[in-house]
Amino acid sequence: MEPLACAPSTSGTGRRARDLGIVVGRGATGPCNAITDVPGVRVGHATVRRPPGVHSGVTAVVPDGVGPDAPLPAGVFTGNGYGKLIGTTQLTELGALETPLLLTSTLSAFRVADALVGWMLERPGCDEVLSLNPVVGECNDGYLSDIRARPVHEEHVRAALDGAAGGPVAEGCVGAGTGTVALGFKAGIGTASRTLDLGGTHRTAGVLVQANFGGVLRVLGRTVTPGSVGLGADDPAPAAETGSCMIAVATDAPLDARQLTRLARRAVFALARTGAAYSHGSGDYAVAFGTRPGGTPVPDAELGPLFEAVLDGVEEAVLNSLLAATTTTGIRGRTAVALPADALLAALAAPAEPSALSAPSAPSVPSAPEGPPRPGGGPATLS
Image (cartoon, rainbow, N blue to C red; front, top):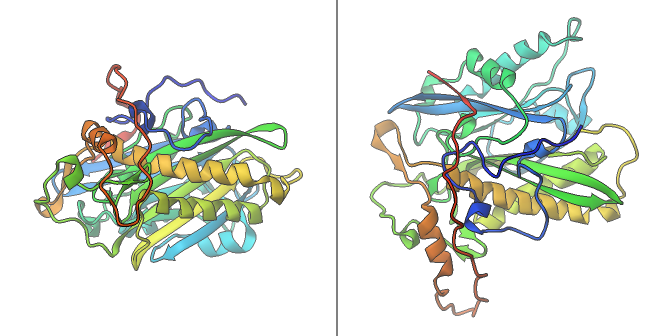
């Protein structure tokens, strides 16, 4: 199955890191620079927005053909386990993914899991299924959204699953990222991919993040705070000890569950590059799956380029989640301000402030290229 050709755009409302000349790592991206560049992987969103109090949703990462009778090899890694990742014990024990991976809001995760089970039982070949392990991750969007209302329902889950598609992926304030905040700014969903030669064969690794974690943003090694990009601090930020990040990793490289767990570890490690604090209340998880079960696994000694691809992809996906997001005012009048692209470029181009440790100067960043605004579209929005 050939990857889809993609226009140089996403479905988000903002620009992406590469649109600004911010390039992470040395590897080439896939045509969409998205997890959907991995053949057989689709993404769908359903956004639940009822201003001012509800900003939530669900995101579905859907590998073609996955099911209890056709599981995919998978691994999971927990950086900090303050979270409600449903399905993790069986996933860890068996190294097998039986369902799409869904992401949502913390208190909606259990309804989402139930809806996913119902959807799966209706799939062809599942008539006699008596056991199923739904995998649902979550982040706490309660800073901006009425999380106690548990606004994500079965119809939203089905809309995300049924609407999942290949090609460009909507980023920012969509689906499970509608109400999330990370690193001092409004965040959301972000994605990226890398292509590489692995054992003489062309392979792809793609990632998708639901960014909602604490810390201080770093871009190309430079610290970026709201103040450094000209924003005030009128609105309090979420408590430093709260926040989470869910990461999905997909690859068409032939890996076994143990190797995919090693890949998931690198995904969580990559959050440190962006300034993650891995605080007490942060649930930091990665689920990695392969789309080519069977075959001879890649020798461990040859996995280095794939590890690097995931590290770079996650770093870029987090930046994309921030740049695509829009300023949002939510419950109790709280506001999360978007990261302004032009001010970010100016901050990166400014001379680095002197440090007692004499840190190396930051990489040069090109000016943002001229171009038409990015188109919108993609996710379903339900009330």
